[in-house]
Image (cartoon, rainbow, N blue to C red; front, top):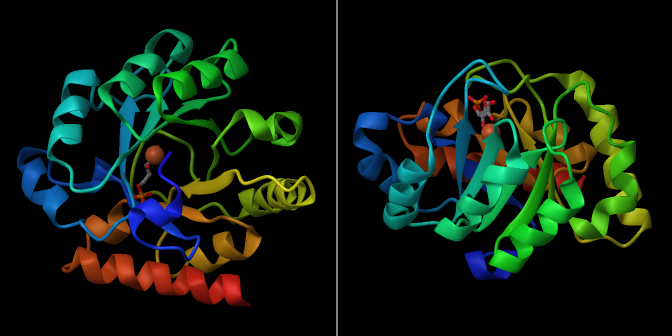
Amino acid sequence: MFPTSETGRDDGIRINPSILAADFANMQAELARIATADFVHVDVMDNHFVPNLTFGPQMVERVQATSPVPLDVHLMIADPDRWAPGYAEIGAASVTFHLEAATEPVALARRLRDIGSRAGVAVKPATPVESLFDLLDDFDQILVMTVEPGFGGQSFMPETMPKLRRLADEARRRGSSVWLQVDGGIGESTIAQAAEAGADTFVAGSAVFGAADPANAIAGLRAAAARAHAH
Ligand SMILES: O=C(CO)[C@H](O)[C@H](O)COP(=O)(O)O
Ligand SMILES: [Fe+2]
């Protein structure tokens, strides 16, 4: 579902603004400002897996009904085996759960795909990626966190780049079409490092919603990633 061509572009780069940095009291207007993005990234936090609390399924359903672009849901929650399918049922284009929280990640990914979502798995900065090498076909996207999950506006952690590079090399070696996503501290000064290490899908909260012109910020991030890929 939702290959790049369906988003109207085929440059292999996806820019997904995170509404964690949006004005929650004006969500409809905020969503309208990012119509040129590929997906809207929705951070679901449960105050258990991470020490912060954001949205539940009702809010995500309203975002789904209002958003000009498909939803990329990032679940920072305990027990995703139980809760993640509900987000796919809402109609989210992709649902990503944390490897550290899941009991049966492959079975859960299969369930998400059966419902009709892309299946994503996320790893925190200290979690190795090697256990995912044999599972690349089971997922549509892998999210390498570039900050500790829980809060927006943190600084990009360059020490996560060797791990991303190993994952990208392995995906290339196996001819995998899995999307490699980064999330946390992504902006015009950091996106090139992540793109050079092999990321193709970029979450940016503060860099987009904190900009005077979010469309311009999205275009700038896209151009910077494209330059790094062309390198
Ligand atoms: O998952 C997240 C935090 O856990 C957010 O998606 C991320 O932090 C985006 O915000 P910013 O671009 O401001 O770092
Ligand atoms: Fe996120």
